[in-house]
Every structure is written in C-alpha cells, then in structure tokens.
Length: 429
Image (cartoon, rainbow, N blue to C red; front, top):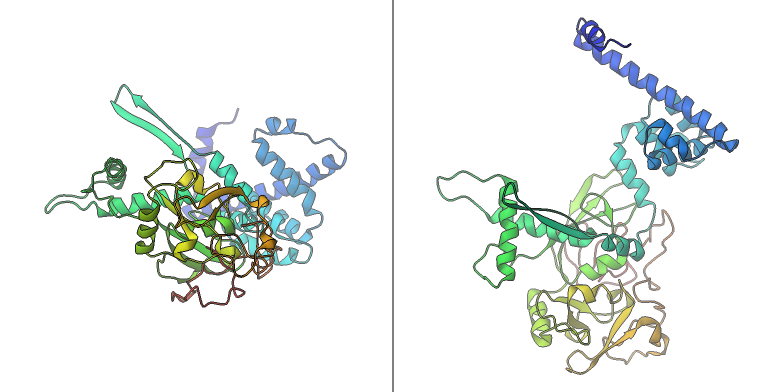
C-alpha cells in the first residue's frame, strides 16, 4: 500500500525550487498521458467501442466525458494542437476550448496562443462564436427561481435564488448602489459588505411598501454592457445577450459601455446613459397610469415600451412609447411575438395583436408612429435590412457586436440618435 507519510517526509527533504520543478514535470507528464488517452479514445470511437458508460468508469461527469470525446475526434484534423497537448503545453480545459476555436487554417496559431490564455477566457470566446438568440434568453428566464425557508435553529430566513441575464445584472446594480449608500455614522466602523447588502435588500422591501425615506429611493439599474470587436454584447461575467434584449433594456436601464479588444482588455468606457430622459419616462407612466396590456391592472414597477421597435424604424417620440409591466414587456416585440398597436394618447386606442397578423408590408410612410415596423422588417426583433449579417466573424453581426447602443460612441461621447445614419451600426432600442 502507498505510504503517504513516507512520501511526504521524503519530499520535505528537498528545496522549494526542486519541489516546483518536480511539480511542473508531473503536470507536463499528466498532460502527455492525456494526449495518449485522447489518441486511444479516438481509435476506440472509430470502432464503436466508446459510450457514456465509460464516464462512470473514469469517475468523471458525463458532460466532461463527452467534451473529451469530442476533443479526441477533432485533434486528428488539428495536428499542431495535438502536438501542443503531447508536449504538455496545454491543460485539458485549454485544449477542450481551443479545438472549438481552431480550424485547419488557424491550427498552428491557436497551438501557440492557447497556452497563454486563461481557460475562462477561452470558454468565453467559444460562447462568443455563436450569435445569442431570443430562445436562449427565454430558456434562461424559464430557469429563474427564488426559494426561502425559516431556519428554526438560528431564527433566520434563509434562501437562494437564480435570476437571468438582464434581470440579474439589474438586481446586482441596484443592490450595489444601495449598499454603497450605507455609510457608517461618525466614529463608527464600517459593517461588512454582506451585512450591508442584506440591509439593502430590506431597503428595497421598504421602498415597495411605500416608504420614500429609504436609501433605495431613486435608484435605477446601471447595467455595464461589454462590447467586443469579435462577438456579441455581454453583461456580468460573460453572459451573452441577444440584440433584442439590449434593445428592450434601452428605455429602462442606464447603460454603461465597456469597449474591449480581442484580448478582453478595456479600450474605452462610455458615459452611463439612458435612451429616455427621466422626464419622458415619468410623463409616459403618468399618462398611462397602469400597464397598457389589455386587461392588466398593474400600476407599480412599470417599464416604458417602444410600440414600434427602434430596430424597425421606431423613434423615442412620446407617441411611440407606452407603459407596461415587466412580465408583459417580455411578451412584446422585439423580444416577444406580440404587438401593442395604435395610438397610446387615446385611452382606448391600443389593441393587442400578434406580429404575424399585421400587414407590415402594407404600411406607408404616412402611417403614425407605433403602427408597426418599416416595410421589409418581416418579423419585429428578428432583424431588419440594416442590422447587418450574423455570420460568424462578420463585422456586421448586428446592433451589439462591437458597436455602441444608439447615442454612445467608443470615446465616451454621445450622439443624437435622430440624426445618426441608421446603416452605420444598426439601431438597438
């Protein structure tokens, strides 16, 4: 039997430098053995002798096992990456991502680059290859949850929650803002961050109860959106956003843009801006007083919706804006499939229809704002003629790919969204 005590005692006789060298040698040898394992796996796979039961035999998750098999299948076409693995230069995480980024033309380049890139960044680049879709956003939203329970031993209410992309980023922003307002009194020590964050959540409850004398009063989400030259927009820790999500955020969040280069380094940060002024938002919500979705009576937490999406030629004019509750907002174009059509200034002038039921092509230039997208916008929120190609690597991937939301530029200056040529970057709100 292996005597771990004797092994450790023997290692303790060596210098720290020797131990570092020995460890590096062992790691390289492990990587060389993994390269050998991948080659064996490939041959077994060719013979139909590989199945999911081997995951349990190897003591790894089914997800990791399938990723390893996929890597083995790919490496025969990527000899430079295969050689880098055999030389012990790439970890398993780096290899599994690199084979998804490389092709026969870039194999040698990625064999040199991958060993110097953090595995998390490689995984982000893999995700960025795929254009985010509304369906993915909906699946994330379907996974939202909040659970809480009383801990009888501590007398505390415990819990856990999961929030999707935009809502998660907005929640994080609000909690951070309220927490940062909680300064200690003179001569008192700062409370720990987690305790102040718990107090911030309580302040939000007070605000919902109608208490205006709370630190949560006047706080609006300030969402930092990362814009890369080689991929879609992101929030939080690399969560990719569909163009439609950024467009719908535009009227209800303060957006701060962080422009990143291909290596993930920040090259510029724009001013925190919002598409609609607080005055316009207040005016729309005051005019409507409730959610304008037919039959809905919700009056709190209203959001502002563009009846005719910006991506289809809509404007920020008062006659193109309507108040809706958050759940119904997600069902409306461009993120959803429903349209609130008509004149919002008329109390009975709004009707709910499906986007596919509207004769978009039959509209003329004389139709009023809010009556639908421009001719040629076949499905609101699914792209318009000026949104650009969505091909992998194309410079015109859409409104959020390496570009600023309308009204912001990489140097932090703002631009009038009514005068900017729409075909330069595509509208986003």
